[in-house]
Image 1 (cartoon, rainbow, N blue to C red):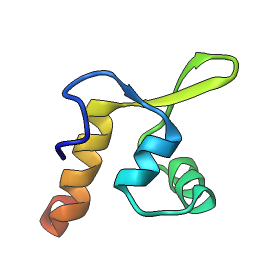
Image 2: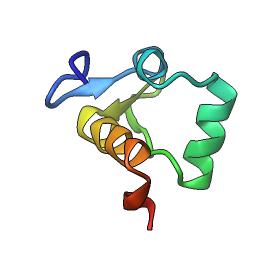
Image 3: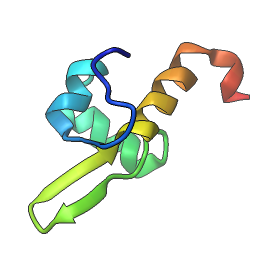
Image 4: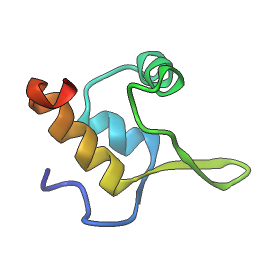
Length: 67
């Protein structure tokens, strides 16, 4: 998690460089609630809170957290 800042925002390309998924799979996960909801920074700029991505990685790494 060295590439993820403590706070701030990550764009989709940054998220997908950390979590190896395709865009379609990522957006399906967002829609289903499996992945965090994005924040709309402007009409054409969508990002995710770094804290949310860090928590997602912790959850995916530890299956016991899913229960």
